[in-house]
Length: 239
Image (tube, rainbow, N blue to C red; front, side, top):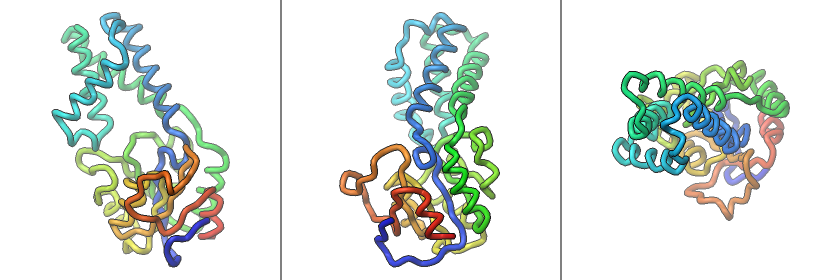
């Protein structure tokens, strides 16, 4: 545990999800593969189109609609629709193909369980503090087995833009009926989570599940209040 500022007690905790409680990258790779396998099996027109085609299409959609970066569901469905049209999927099958591919991805995207250690941390904290999840992604907290610990789960959307913008931080604070300085935000991303929480007046903690933590190698704009090498240290600090 490393303190970068004098510690002040808090009354609630908000958490990032992806790469804070689990390594998100292999999960996304599995979900992407399942989506493409579904399309190749059900819609042979797509077989000759590589993942590079779809990733290039994603960049095009974001160039045309940059605000879609705030909503992974809208972005994915838009990319699927545009790509399936280019692949030659007929209009009569288009809606079904988009929805089928999206549902396949969505299933596999949340088809895992977090480690028992994470449950132990959340269970200990939830017994003493209200907890809120704030994520730029779209993981289903109930399906991965941690929804019961949170008073509220916030997902970025077109109406509630992604961290580090203030919208979800403000909604969490308002739901908790606390001032910003009474809330600690914990996350892995030094821009979205650390800079975002500090810039919005929250206390900030840095913890990354998906990589070796080395502040000197991270693109930090601001230091957190505290850095944890293990989430058990969060329990030690607050409980």
